[in-house]
Length: 283
Length: 190
Ligand SMILES: [Zn+2]
Image (tube, rainbow over all chains, first blue to last red; front, side, top):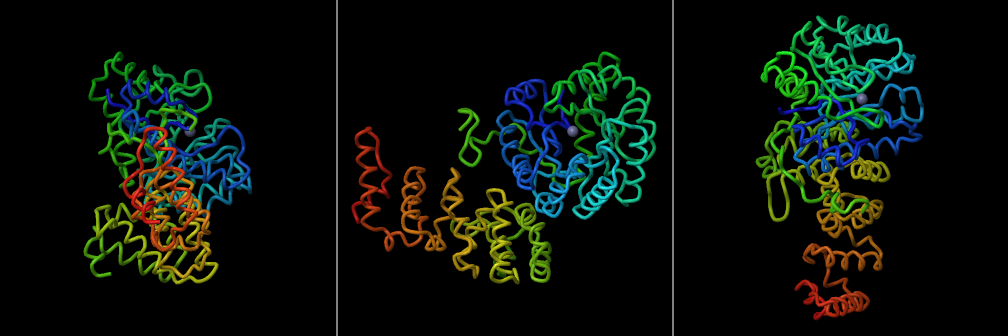
């Protein structure tokens, strides 16, 4: 089974996780920019984070033959903080970089006027930089949040096939199906979705424009739940080819729209990153 | 410039990027990172690659002066990956910056990346004070970077650098290790 995790926050994970993921068949991933769990208080901590998404993390992933790409954006929660909004003018410098295959995560957290403005501005950046967009849907007031998300996407003029609406569930998939947008599902140990519930949704809505991710981060999460979902699909009677479509070909097709997805170097290992290796740690 | 234009993989993009930068200098932030992808990374002339040369061409097309030029060059370095940083370092000597970007050279010398340390020791390194410059030369010896990357080495090398190299040679001998041949040659010439 070859796996492309289309949404995972590796900065929050250990090098051992990269090793386990490689052993489980993960060959490529996309790491969207998000909240750190603790507020950032200046643009500098944002740009240092972006630098690790385009520099250090791809290097760490390459040690295990995993190809790392990322999505760059100001996340919805921090869109409300004027200190963080100052990062918006810097985004173009990152969106043009080779490993950046989408604008994301954008969307709503609390549906404030500030979030409205930042969400629309970043969808415009996606259009301007010819990139797909990864759109997070809120945890609270999810149905209303998803409806409003789809309205903003429509108003932005971005082609719906270049948008993934993520963190969907049984209640919100119906809103997205038929819009032309891609549907993303985050499989979590307790909350969000589980592998058996995911399989039921694939049965009902089919395999087209479906993306399954672990969204693993610093919370209780598991980077191998993509593999578990593939296994649950097989156990439920889906074919190997079906699993390959959902876990590999779909994300390749979606992010391939950036023109920057590079899977040629999967399995090749860089000895050092700017002179530093991960073997000695801490150095 | 015609020769470089023939070497880049997407000449139409390159021409458009040069024109855009000349008219709208702020656009360079969104063009500079895309250069390797659009122009190619193949070798071009001695020690240079096509993307290095194309980035230097974009920088020299900037219609900025004084502090505005220093600020943009500094930002391109700050937000650049290793290839972008190297191109900025290589361009410094061709831009009218005075000593306004010497801090970039000092930053590059602090890295452990031999590509950046080497690029930092071009002609623009004349703005470094002597103490920092000698440390940088010694760091090249430590990192096995050929001393041929150091611009104006024989003119600037002095008695203090000789003392430092002799000390390193002594430590190496005591540890049963050798010095790179170019460092030995420099020491003997001083
Ligand atoms: Zn996320």
